Image 1: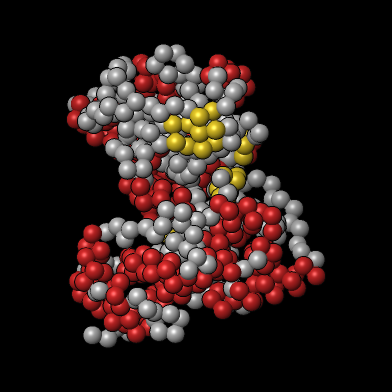
Image 2: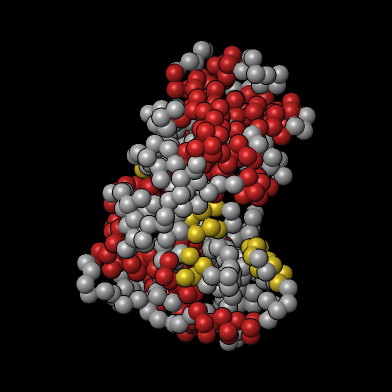
Length: 523
């Protein structure tokens, strides 16, 4: 099973209102010192970078909607909240906002008409951002074409729909401020602190939280559970955090979603890297890495190892379901299957990300093979046992705290193509050139009647056609694209059996990867 090393170094899209977060790490481009005067064009360009760094578009764009026009419903424990229109439309967007109003929203969490903003909008972090950077973002947003998109109604139950009730929350948990550099730290670390603690709002996911959704600053960046995912410890902790990562490895991970010897990103973190982090400059990313490595590690939790009976049961589950790929020593296969020994998804405080990988599988990425959703054919007890074994074997010292109840909860939440249980059906291939290449390969016809015993021949016939039709397509893209093309056929062949769908799709995806890697392509 292919497992992510750190399913979320900093941010991954804000979803927590008073108590819940989604993922999205961003950063700010400017140092905390005032910037020199700039032309409107330069200011908007700088603001575009800042908006990209903060991944603003992720929350303020509805599925299929216009960028920044709002309309996305975000789930919280208290109901659903819709995101507002950020285009310069004067009646439904922010076209009527002046500089002071826009800055007050970011700095104080107060809207145009003096209303308190819900902390789904991460103003407890944005308050650190300088006025200059805030107004650069405004300049960029005002350069966009206006979209008439009225805000959708909030779906909060009483008393959470009463904004005045937020005064108590603000009194307890919020104080407006602006970032002040630490004179004892280097300029690079201070810049990283500004990025991480400002627009990046990494702690929105990686800090501990209390029952009212406020970040527990005594647990800064020490990890937390978010919508069934675990945002790991990203302090300098050498066991659970990034203390054993080099600065270059952190930067590589933030840019590409993978770091040599550390694993790959999955889930919302992968989306954040694709939509936001990969666009940040190297100096910004290095500054963030330097700051993360400067954050003091928490005192290690007491590790409780499983007893002999549990260890034997856990080992049996791992050897039965996982060892054929990841090996009995947890070292995986170099360049194809990542090691589980020392893998951040397993050494993290929470087991959620590892469980998600087992249940939902993982697509091919960074030249690593896809992971079938083997959990679809495993019991909740066996998944918990296998995860617990991997968390406490080969030098991993994480507590074996995966339980069948947690697995059952995550099973209900996990949907993926490899798991074969997407409620909206199979996803499109996406890339037009690859779509055309797959069409040229006559994939639907060639794969129509494949089964477990005869997958290799049609795969061998398809691959050279796809490669020649789209020579720029990466191996990862071909594996995932062909899997998407096969998905509806697997749906039909499985006749409604989810475990069968998952097995068919997983086998096919793995075989495509294997044939590409060994060059088995017949004309």
